[in-house]
Length: 459
Ligand code: UD1
Ligand code: CA
Image 1: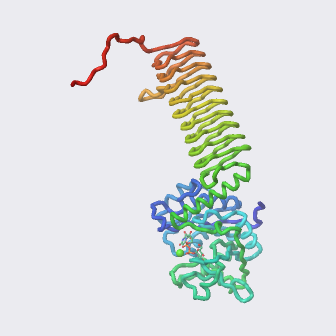
Image 2: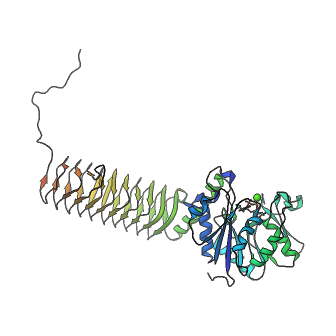
Image 3: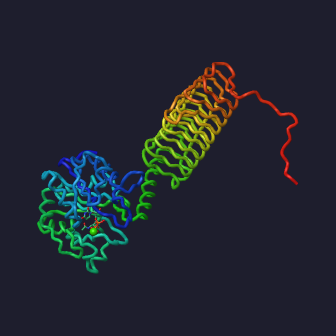
């Protein structure tokens, strides 16, 4: 996208309390796709290559700058909310008079940079450019008033509109672009003599028209671009809209989603060819799935890489883990941070792996815990085996070398090492290293008590 010739500065209005959210959290910090509404808007602003981005936040919104943590933003506090015109005016002292200003909204997250770019281009040509749209129900939006020739003459807020104006279906989305110098001049002339006693940004339109300055309109491609969020119900609907935009894009790339309505991406997903994702899968953070990866139902993937031809069966939780090629995980497996599986590893049901390398071809198939370990190639960890990696104060490492076999229900009390091709008998409590190639047992000799009788009930 070519950057505008005149330097562009963006003002984001984000001071609204969001009373209807019924929350202590400032409205613009509520999330869609796992990120604050305002973060989405800032992404779009940055995509426009704006020279400077100013965010007007409100009293009670002190945590907004901290949570958003974007050092490129000029944060402007609007102590009291006297209207959209007042809000924009708060940011103007920080704006270069030679710049072009674009006004965005912190609670309208799905506006597309392409639409805004068109709006900015119209303003660049020497106009006050408004983003407007025809709706079948104009609702509470400001109405775009045009003369007989179809030229815009003003915007009338719903609360100030007469019955004829109320019937107008072309609405003000709120998005606009204008030269900073003009904007500053108009804002200085605003009054709050209206139904709400507010300084309306929209009043600049009639001023521009009075001065013979051109006022033009652009339209967004979709209504969802201009929809704001005022309630939890709207937030939930917006989430679905956002998710369906993401799933459309992913399916376009070739992803098979068993049901796009039952998939949530809260981050970035990159996929190879022929990736299949079953229902109720949540992807968070940065996730990479190689060619031919299959993800089973009810699975959470957070910051993971899964190599080609690997399969994650139903009901798994994988977080900050690396899975090689041709692996089989689950059902009901948990890979915790630092789990690094080489190729062709099998991790089965009710197995937890944390901060451990598992070598190629190794299997941990049932009810096991492997933590802080280095496991070689072709190792078999039997059912119920666990590493006792924590002594109550410190964590210790377990090393299991290539080809070793850990018997069912063994406890490896770390720090401890199991040599190459060693075998641990079932139920071994390993407190010392197990030598390579040998069988190690820790239990006493098995014995049976001759003539022993089961207790019986007294009659
Ligand atoms: C405004 C427009 C209206 C338009 C509508 C689109 C005005 C006067 N009216 O309505 O024509 O159809 O948006 O949604 O501009 N805000 C502040 N500080 C304030 C007041 C508002 O930061 O003092 C922010 C709010 O957080 C919100 C945005 O500005 O993000 C719009 O405010 P809101 O009250 O929702 O819109 P209206 O003024 O009712
Ligand atoms: Ca208002």
